[in-house]
Image 1 (spheres, rainbow, N blue to C red):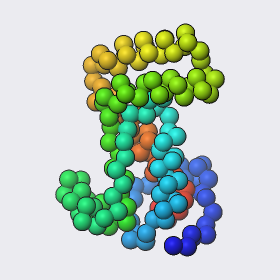
Image 2: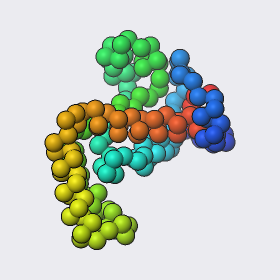
Image 3: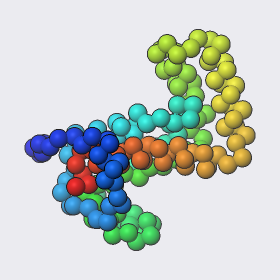
Image 4: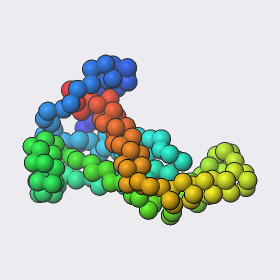
Length: 158
């Protein structure tokens, strides 16, 4: 599939012109663009840098049709050529914490004392959070919004 030639739209222009998208073109999303959109989400900030989200990419029309039913029967879910479902993971931090610490140390963020504080703080804050589902939903929304901005920057909302 040939790459469309277009300019990436500046964020200031996107923010100024942003409105809800009523419908989508059936034009396919290029694999390279989809990868760029997903990469943007993976780079999105989150509390403690834990990124408590997972993504499911749906290109199959049958699956999008099923999703439409679950999405309040919104036609745009079925007509979009690809849908990315952002899923919050309320328990993922338990598995991901050590990797986040390792990556932080690899990038020179902190030493052993920092790692111990991070373990203690994250475990105390998230292990007993009164509404972990809401916290994760807020974090996941940051990633979903970042994907939306990237898709629009690549011209998929014009």
